[in-house]
Image 1 (cartoon, rainbow, N blue to C red):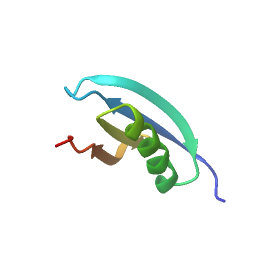
Image 2 (cartoon, rainbow, N blue to C red):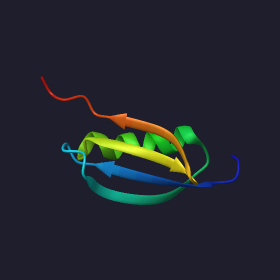
Image 3 (cartoon, one colour):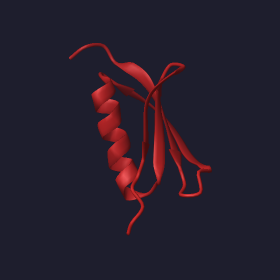
Length: 65
């Protein structure tokens, strides 16, 4: 494993308002995305993942039909 990097996970409610903010250490962008998706599936409608100031991933959960 490589050195860890700091990621910011910013979760959003269905109306787009901020819900929660996490800072975490991960060894890769993929690990940060997996962590964010596990939390996203449980409670929130969307997430932005930043490494430093750079947005590396934006995801919105599909609305139920």
